[in-house]
Image (cartoon, rainbow, N blue to C red; front, top):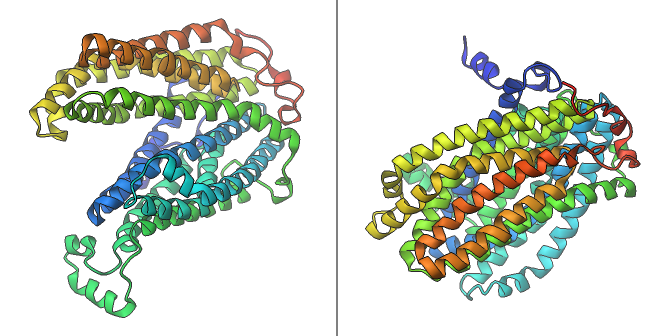
Length: 500
């Protein structure tokens, strides 16, 4: 078996999957695995900017740190549009209504373009004010502005690519976006050092032992790089190329999702649907961002060793939770398609299967983290105090990782059924009403251990709340709004609550 055959057997496209009948485990795995790979590529994307800007200057590295909250807010807004498009495409595909799926995809792309242009203009105009609001010092502020203005100009490329990923996922194809993502990440890693440093003392050429080529290139072009602006251009440029590939795939329609230029005139009724489904998802993302920021205020009251340990712990968590995020998106797609096909019982079992699997897998993974907590912490810091705090953090939290998997599984089901408000409410309860208050109160009483115990408590509460809310069955209620023309033919297919 060749390499390509091995890859094809591992990453199966929608033509080899039946999401609405038969086994649940293998289709869910086949949907989720490419998403895990996509997320890993996204991590590489972010690390490339951080790695090369850190070698350019401390100010540039600091600037990218301050730019992140602004970028994250924009991504949160894009999340709502992409979730709405994914849900609608999934439900119409499950209902066998390819024309409605195509219309939903076309409208989603159109609204993504409109919203990204509006936000891009606002971001470009007001980035100075936002930077001042963040309290950025005068040496770093101009670099933040430089980065964000390039990002604002190319915002549609970033928005549009996120929408492409979501629409393909709604159809059931997570493999094609994985390949497109891989190409864009590789290109970004190559372009980043060139556009940041140019051909003058470029560390990439030094690592590759190509100093002679670097000198020749500098003499031929005189290009000395654009610094942090080059990093922004590399990000936006590679996203734009990836979006162009994605649009070509969707216009051809031979990979499932089809978009048509004639159906891209924004429809106000569809816009209402986008708002109803997408706004809660955007609020969920914004709430997560805000809770993380506010929790940092609590962390900042402790010595630097504690904040360092917090950074180590959250980095470890972000890697461990990649499978939960991927399975959540896989469940979102399978729930949407099964509801569209009228198989509500199968949609429910998909959620339960995913929750059970994540509970076991992440609990085992968390147990391994607990056993190896000190060596893992030692990888990230040589400071004994940081290692001690990080070890305690990982040991206190590790055995509750499975509950995060449970919460992610069921919130994926809520999104797939169109009940994004419930998913947002669960996140708000877990992070805003449990983790943050517990951390604030317990840390003042029990010192640093009080900060750490906020995480396992909120993890357990989040998993239990998600399960109990799902068991109420409110997500079964006719999917979305039955009178919405964008859902024509979907709600009528829901025939029972206990079918296969």
